[in-house]
Length: 494
Image (cartoon, rainbow, N blue to C red; front, side, top):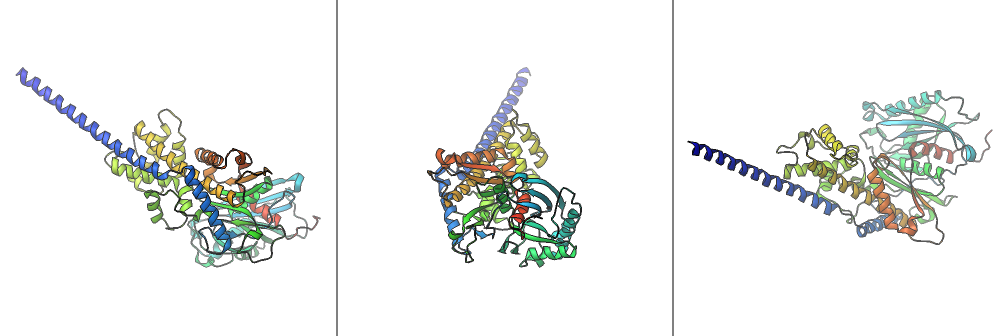
């Protein structure tokens, strides 16, 4: 009897050990599969210096092609008609309207010339009701004009408009536009959730001016720009050596100052300044040298604009978090990363945003507590192990590093086009103004971008290349461009 009991206990123990061994084997295989996905991701996202130089060269080649003819390149290289940037001498009261998403901003600024600079500025942000984003053109612009009229009515005594003068407005309109002068342009298509049939093919400045007239507001739109050109103008106002601006936020774009005689497709008179600001629309860049993965290809195929904005889909805030989600989903499917069942929320596209990714990536706590909290709160994944959390951070690291290094290669391409990438005897200072939440708030991303650009340029050249955070270029920049293209330029202020 006793022998039988001992045998039973021994057998049970053996079964327990066997189950434990089996579980450990399964666990080892599971981690092996997860590690294989990670290794493959790292290899396919690799952006070594040689590849980055190929990307930079390709950007410069596409820039030349886009300047030569319309449609000759993946880079549109749009002529902005901005031929003079702010100098710091501007004086007077100027307004800006910044429309680029579900909110718009109105801003006024009193400029005091070289000495006074920005004497005072005020800003207000207004949400656009959802129904106006898909309603009629008149309704949208009437709503904006009414808000602008209300803002003008609140103008205090600190703001001074000389008698007999019209108020002047810089209009930042961050949607694709075919520009025909500094203050006119027809809408090519709506993006960012807007879909208003009536406006496509129409002059957006004429639409806004009609709505301002209906409000009885005597205001002239003197500059139509996008947010990137606004950032360039704001940057130049603060620092005369700014030659280019880059937006790294939800989306991405770049603009720079080109010599007008280096633009073969420009058939107008050469501007007095000899310069022309070019809106690159660089998000649409693509090249066989870009390191693409299966996750990028699937994301692109399922997007609203397949085959377009490939560069943007690799480097901008709209997409980085989504790439991480797709990698996690594959690891869950192939290696049961979060248990046998796939967490339902992990299947939802764009649920994991880049700010969430950034918080996890920057977690410095010993147990990666923030990573655990984000996985729980965003994806509904409970009780993750430290090993799993470390894996998540490693994925964030690979995806962010690739994006930042490719963004640096794009900037190097611009510097190549301008001849600012080689050592020169003059040691000319070159400043790039960068705006956007991705660059401003994702520290790892911005630091990687800067260190990559430094390494690519080499010590001598990088000592004269400066990257500056340009906060709110799109608002103040538009007001400054309204001043730089004022109808009263050259007239003495009464």
